[in-house]
Image 1 (cartoon, helix red, strand yellow):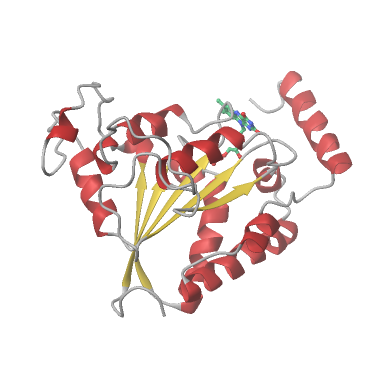
Image 2 (cartoon, rainbow, N blue to C red; image 1 turned 30 degrees about the vertical axis):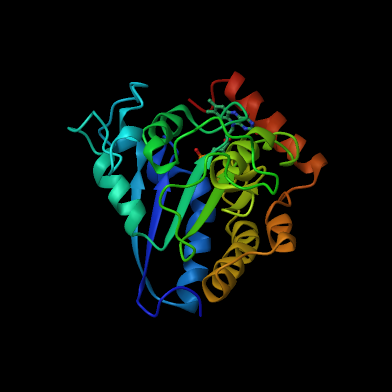
Length: 249
Ligand SMILES: Cc1cc2nc3c(=O)[nH]c(=O)nc-3n(C[C@H](O)[C@H](O)[C@H](O)COP(=O)(O)O)c2cc1C
């Protein structure tokens, strides 16, 4: 048992502009299902696309205030920040866009600047900790990043996402689950294949809820592609041909 004995609060921040239709959320839901198999929890899902918020103005004034309040007061960010602070487990779920997070999620992330400590000219820590340090660090809180992409494998294409979260949270401050080829697996509507693929995410969710962590071997296993390179190429060629022929619009 990790954390407190109380029923845990789980907050999912869905950064896919497709909201409920996100293929990444298919994996996130499998992970959540496994978590529930071990222990019940309260769940809230926030779709960033539907939030009412403005981009960060860059004034840095939140950093000067004790509670980190933003100068923009009349939108949803204050409410979401409170939910983040109250959650035991935060899962950020999003597709890879241009080798990074989707624009809407980056705009949202910028508005959470006050969750970092101020930068005072210090050098990067040597052990992979958060570059600024986290303002509200809580050893009992867990942060999981789940992302999917179209590419064959996650090496290379996720380097900038990994670097960004390493810098923000520290290398050990989050668990990154990066899934290749996912949208195709969801789109082809082969339920047996999809369900077989999702089992390992549910198992990982269950083990995560039990132990409060995910080991490197599990994370690497979750990043294995569902299709062989050859099969995947055939699916993609077919997809783009249908697109070209106007069969998909
Ligand atoms: C604007 C845009 C940019 C994308 N950039 C990448 C990319 O850099 N690398 C990649 O492998 N897939 C990329 N993709 C594909 C998505 O990551 C992939 O389809 C993902 O599984 C969709 O997840 P979702 O259904 O949860 O939104 C991109 C898709 C879009 C729409």
